[in-house]
Image 1 (tube, rainbow, N blue to C red):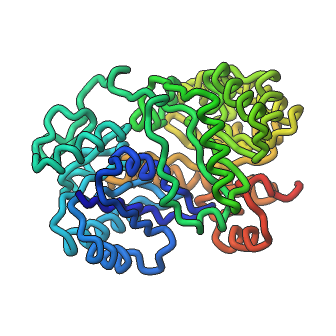
Image 2 (cartoon, rainbow, N blue to C red):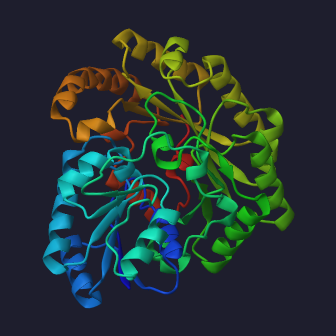
Length: 441
């Protein structure tokens, strides 16, 4: 069977992102199929490029990856979905092959997107087993996909309820992403390659969609296997100068984080790296282990500067833990960048101001400030209008406090987050996450 994989994501702020999920799917499909990756990230005319590629390849199945339903600065959902509308129209105009969609963005609101795009199939959540089973049946001439976990059809567009541990794969027996297909422009642009050390997140943050995508069951990869993939990826591409660990949270559980760090040290891997970090169960011993393994920076979902806000968001930690995490990172020589999502449900403008006071108090290396935007606003105009008025006032408060602080980034306002700035920094030769190159205060 001929399978065309379409990486539709074109977001390049702050950097273009390697389509790791599709690379896993390309491996999961197996070598018995004729495959191609149509990556639209760098195409000046993406729909025309897609049309040409489909005409040339003549696929039997089109697999579309949908990374997000919002753009990186959280200012737009309508434009993203409009782009996918046009993408689907182009696919339908150039092939009669069935279309399956998956990815993080799709898994957040699969029912609505199945209907909107009139998809033949969808995969909600973890996709390797589901995609392999789907392609096996389609290759055998079967259109009935009943019984394949996580696969949706026009007639059954709701994922099975109560997915449990048995529904998720063993990450130590999973395929590796097929990195042969990666466009070298990703590496020439930022020097960053992604690596995943585990899947799943047991935390219960009120707004987070990770459990919808990966489940709550944490499945860890063997530390030496991670280090082996890491080392091989870096050695295969001379333009790679940084690794980003894409786990929902790297340091949970701490034992596994220590295992990965020890494996990297044992192999002599010295490529600097960045990860997402949670203040829960982060201590000096782990900070030092990460530093020895050449961790350069951590991105922390602190979210609120008030204990009441953290409790409402079900973060599982307090402001004291955020302070401690900032201090531990500083002591270990690891740059810390805290993300705050202000104006969430139940917050007042006074709460927002208190969070801004807190950010000044902890004085992190970097801070990314966002006004809350619900993913469901992408398909619910009434919800978007209701939340939009308050969000505008939240952004006014953020802007007033952020403008004089050189390491505070406000994506939705374009404050230290725009094409012109990032382009200049990359042209100057800076690699890795750009927040780590922020100027001094």
